[in-house]
Image (cartoon, rainbow, N blue to C red; front, side, top):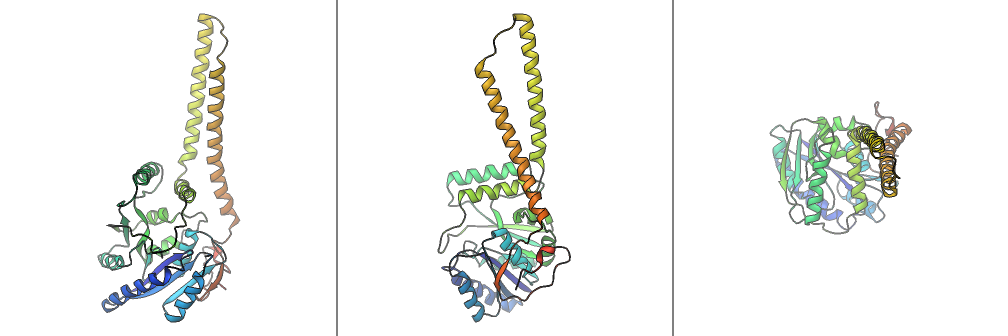
Length: 325
């Protein structure tokens, strides 16, 4: 069985060689069992010497394949590029910063032999702060009430997928991608095991609070239209409240006579309704913006350097044109 290791990289020059050394050790341990490996590195427009390191690794190890983007297109684009260029019977997706322990690949291969199409590594919250843990749990509890697929706290991109799962994911050609949801949406037999997340070997994380917030919103909006339905229900609720309030004013006027309305009540009502309207317009704008990007049909990424041979255009996705020089 050929196993493809897909590792997106962004400013990882300080750690990528150590990552490759550890992956090579795992490959040597699996080779006697009849498993070979290839290494697919995706340089997501790094600003440092990551591309130079990958070129050097490719010169030393013929199993190394790399694709370097013309700029930073984001992790979702890097994952897509990695899956497109992985030719293995199964694919392991993992980060190149060594927070995903390479030795767990052997465990994944063992579980794959039991017939699972997806073997998912779920990290525990050991070592996380109380605020981060609580926030994550509340987020997953909230989105799972709204989304059409179920997301599990601690489950990320670190997983092994069979070839049919990879092909199914590649058939999903939307521009606005949320891989964690796509992996759950395609289904197929899956199993999960837990591990403790390791600290970064070097460098700094590229995920800021703003980036995490946007990523969470992408997940919420990518797999359902319930926020739009919520806007409809909220509008109907506000209309009902306005009708009841109007009826109460009319009855009070008939019983007690006309009284001067309260200034504070009016201002509060107007401000509150205006705020709700702005939120709902923002939700509609998010969905409209996603339609806008889908209609444009732009490629998910552009490539400036690669040692991968150019692939034929995919008949189901015109976005694969002219990506690899």
